Length: 254
Ligand SMILES: Nc1ncnc2c1ncn2[C@@H]1O[C@H](COP(=O)(O)OP(=O)(O)OP(=O)(O)O)[C@@H](O)[C@H]1O
Ligand SMILES: [Mg+2]
Image (cartoon, rainbow, N blue to C red; front, side, top):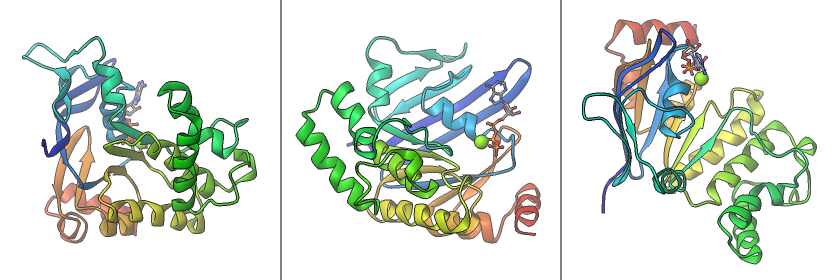
């Protein structure tokens, strides 16, 4: 069994003349939780968007396990065709800051729509799994509500359930709590910590340093399109080696 769930190597990405990713390499192992921190504009979201095929790399390679999505023999990223992108998408889930739920669908339908309509799973099977996830996310009793009847924290937990129902090998989160107030943030972070305890492989972009310290096996500090420093949380957050990391941490904590 391949232990690497996702491997992005020498990733480069520019928008016009703006080089946003400059030679980024990041490998995530099965069961690992990686937190990505860093200042605004550093390229964190772009890295996640490239990893999840929402953007294409200019250069570098991208693998999910043994599945090569993009390779680079030296003249730029070349994307595999045919069924490869679909297979890759079936291996990861993505949770954004703003939930992106369907406003006119119930909680149950938001969670079961993709497994039923896209994966053609039987409705009973999809709903049985959805009930388990609704319980795990602390949402029992909300099955027939629509998103506007829920708090932001509840909506975010629905979006996590919606990602999990597709049985991803890895979950990517882009600032999952930045739109929430502290109380609702705590509920969402608790759910993510539970997933970590169940060995879910995750990459989490976050500004919540205490959370990153608690949940992450590895913290990656990105600035200016590069990984400036990475290592265990105790090292990167508590005893950063690089001046830029120290400046960032003192700014957000101070
Ligand atoms: N679709 C796009 N078109 C043009 N420029 C973009 C696009 N997406 C991102 N950028 C630019 O890329 C740079 C990195 O943006 P990105 O969103 O990846 O940063 P970030 O680290 O996620 O920041 P934040 O903490 O504010 O979310 C920024 O200069 C941004 O303006
Ligand atoms: Mg971002």
